[in-house]
Image (cartoon, rainbow, N blue to C red; front, side, top):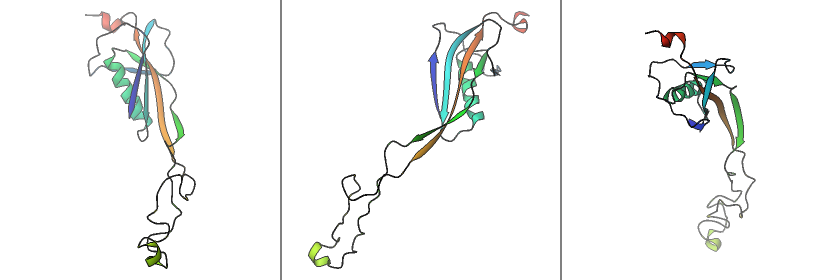
Length: 147
């Protein structure tokens, strides 16, 4: 799982206590607030709940009161390079080993794009993606003002 933080303000705040609950919001609140950072979580194997929990934990470290979450999405992408597969004969398959050596005519074969190879095999990857904007309210709530 990877986490990327894009700061949206130069202001810094004390981290919230570990037991402090950070609200997960679906829409931006009407209450005055400061947008602290955009937090992006991606993973090839984690669930949406795991990504959300990771975003909320990072927002807590930034001193946020809440996170406005976006919609989760699955990104589909191709792998970094094709996986070449050789079409050359296997070692020892040649009927005249004395003429061409113990490996046969085309062997030992090479797995590179210049040999006789099949096209690259598709390597599709799926990545779960979730982002949110960490916010901190401008004025303390009624519960925070009472001694």
